[in-house]
Length: 178
Image (tube, rainbow, N blue to C red; front, side, top):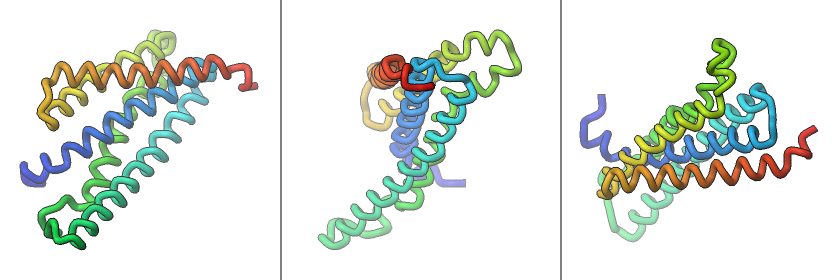
């Protein structure tokens, strides 16, 4: 088990990965719904995004953290033991991206087992994603020292705008899906 201080040290990566996981995955769901694609296609696109984008973010975080560490050492700004581990930043980002990013897909995964879920899967995805963004936004507020409600609603608004853009693009381009 990690020490309490170590867990807090990587909380910003968890927030970063979680917000992006929820926003990008729900944007994929919204765009696909706007294009009137099937649930199967939505799940394929959603899970492809979840793992590929999560991996990309983790690797990018690793490279960014290791580059900053090397730069700091070159300029004698810090010692390696005082900085975050690039591997741990990557792992925290990837895990949070997957854990929060899967939330928009849950209703689509469960839709075959319940007619109620099936007929409301997009609305449920919207609500679950909204709740996830509010919670991660509150955690973000705590990490950066901002009021949790303001941070929650700011995060929700950003996710909502991204989803709306994706939905509109999907809707406008749905004639191309044949």
